[in-house]
Image 1 (cartoon, rainbow, N blue to C red):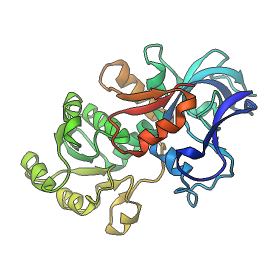
Image 2 (cartoon, one colour; image 1 turned 135 degrees about the vertical axis):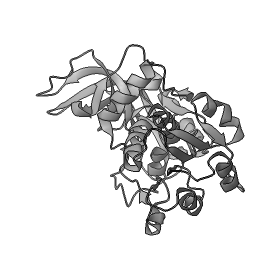
Image 3 (tube, one colour; image 1 turned 90 degrees about the vertical axis):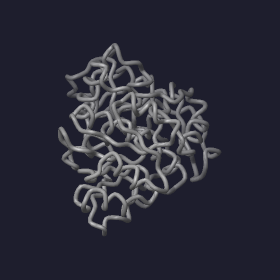
Image 4 (tube, rainbow, N blue to C red; image 1 turned 30 degrees about the vertical axis):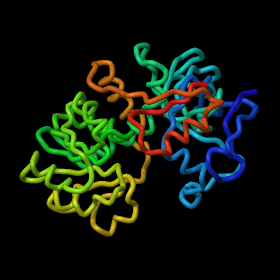
Length: 304
């Protein structure tokens, strides 16, 4: 048996229960993990509250989470990449908010010994979303990228990955997060009224590309600063596609390719993953409540 977080009806975190369930068994091409860390993402509480039921229909009772790190304790038929005892990270098939979870072997990579569990469990969702976004925006060395919500989950990764590519990054964030962004090589600016003037003071000719991870209504401003909609991409304003911008809805589509690049940069000391707070599995409700505030300066991670 295995402890897991589940909900039997949509609602706020009060619907969550920690229950004892049978440990899942891996099928062909899959492995089972003893979960050491599970990343908490905004998508999780949106699923819990029913906001995603049209796009991501689920059967209740259901669990949450897909960002995972753990130790392989069972190997399915045909798996040769991993063995029992291997430490891995990536995306799970079964809910990650649990003591035991199953994942496709192809969706996992080996966890370096130097990477702490809480960091390993926080990489897949945000990191593997940021990586393909930069690919879609075609951000290259010497270009200027504006990121709205640069201190958020995806923004933190995208900013550092873009800096590693040699781009100049301007990032909107609250004043409390400006010093953190400077430590990443990002030029911070406050969001809100007068944003266009603040960005133009840094980039008088405008910017080459814009990533909107905020959803605060900056799309028209972003199009203006980028000189057109072609290289403006949003992760949150799904209704803005008719303006000609790119709308990214593929989630962590970068997969293991992104994880390999991110892990290499972490080991080189060129990418930092801030951890806001860790919680035990029994406090998953508190973790999701913190995520819902939208004022998080780092990743939230469950440690089963």
